[in-house]
Amino acid sequence: MPFSLIPDLLFEDYAAVTPALLRELGVTLLLSDLDFTLAAKRTRRPDQALKDYIAALERAGIGFMIVSNNRSGRRVTDFCAELGVEYQGHAGKPSPRGLQAAMARAGADAAHTAMLGDKLLTDCLAAKRAGVLALTVEPVGGAVTLWQRVLHAMQAPFKAACRRRMAKKVKK
Image (cartoon, rainbow, N blue to C red; front, side, top):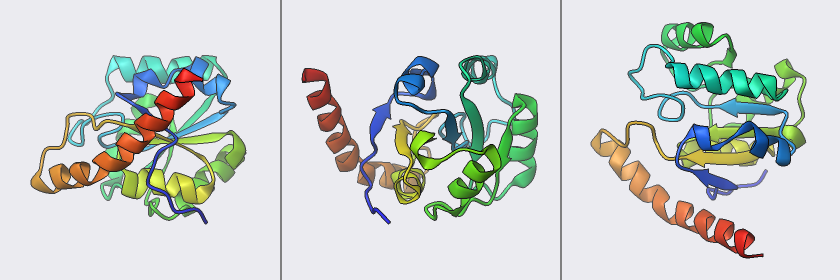
């Protein structure tokens, strides 16, 4: 199993991961973290922009499922119900098991799946270990607690490496 904390691609937010880009990358299933990826941790309900994004994915024929380590099953259940999407809870990221279970439920394979998240130690590493494309966004709402600030500071060199790789690809 690969061990890498460098995401394949880095974005400012989920909206930058467009259906057109995903189609270009051959992605037919987008798995996504919830907290700090699609919404701030304490956000109880999805906003209209997120609902529109999910609808655009659906129109493009791209499946979508939330894969979360969140311990509050009720919040994730309610959030996903309002979005009209399934989720794989208690995913155990960075273990690839949650991602593999989500792919099995969706009938997708790793070659056509991407994982979107904000944390390299959970989301990105789980993606790498599962053999799916690792897409990373800056945390929605920013790093709030001291631990989050430390964690995101530790991620900076890996994000910088990703930015350098992306810049080289653009120059080609």
